[in-house]
Image 1: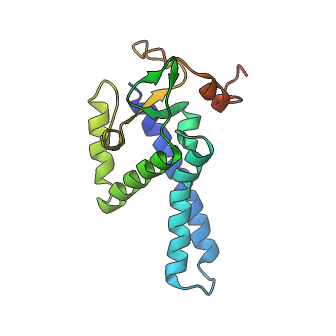
Image 2 (image 1 turned 180 degrees about the horizontal axis):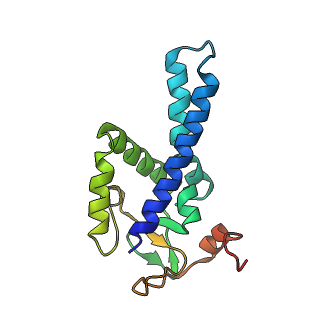
Length: 165
């Protein structure tokens, strides 16, 4: 199960988003801008932390990259390569997760965590909606974790993130 790694990845992403939002709030607070513009900048930064990394390295936010996790299609793999959803699909997945979190004042994260923690495959609500799952790209300390075949695309995405590179 990769629940603890997913939780750490989400914490890293949320901390980065929060830090950037706080910096921007202090920066634009005194500027002569309409309130909607300030709020738009804050929302863009918050969502950018979750969306922009998926455009650069599909299936990985900054936190997932640090934790060596990747979002893949749940439908299996072609040959020996796991399939990563399209960037558009990944952006929609992140937008749904953010919308559910904001609209439920964070209660969604509790439900998603319970669902993920109680499933062998670690899938959560937004994984079911978009037909995805999160896999570890490196061996985890728990011996029950499956071995995953890391394809050339994933090796390239991970280049420079290990002390073995």
